[in-house]
Length: 257
Image 1: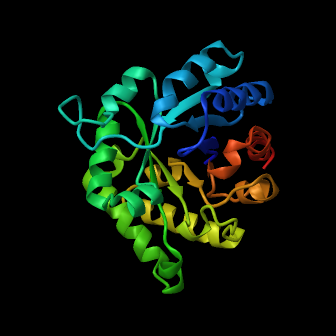
Image 2: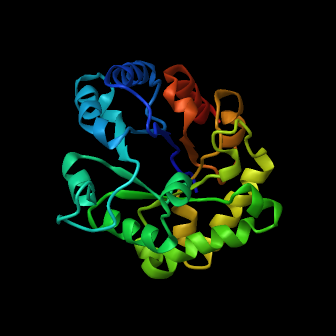
């Protein structure tokens, strides 16, 4: 099955208003075709400003907004400092990252919390992007598949094929994030294939249609090689998405892969 690639930029806790506008302006000007989907994940504080910029850019409508995180609680309530999926949907956000490795490791988000957030996003009409991946210690211990299966099971066992039908997965080898050390193409392919095979135990149709992004130090130099693999359907880009030229080059690589 031919799956449409998604190029998503996770800006993490980086960027000023001026820097974000410059990035979006460059991206809008450089989008060569509509053969791939584009999304950016600015900080929650900058979502409004980025929305305004995209609304006035020529190709802005083709760049979707995503949230880096959201509240586990649904709807509205007395949860100071939190932003609910309903609020994000009301604002026009399309995607939401669930279980990014930094949320898991730095903020203690468990598989159970990830499930709550996944369900909250789905119920509000957002598209969850479930992040899964192993640490260096887990890879060296030969536990890559068991770790990822546990992270997948925490969601799939509760929501099933139907609940996962409109979600995406991002494989992020934790040991490759921010280290400049990318997994080899073969390592990435092996894990993407494992994820799709595991989903196939629940539903062949869902496994064939779900998009699986690679999120481990994707750069212009390795993007085309990675994206040419059958089971890699785009990228969740970190550091390289902060450089407009690099981000656009990665998107161009996805188109030509």
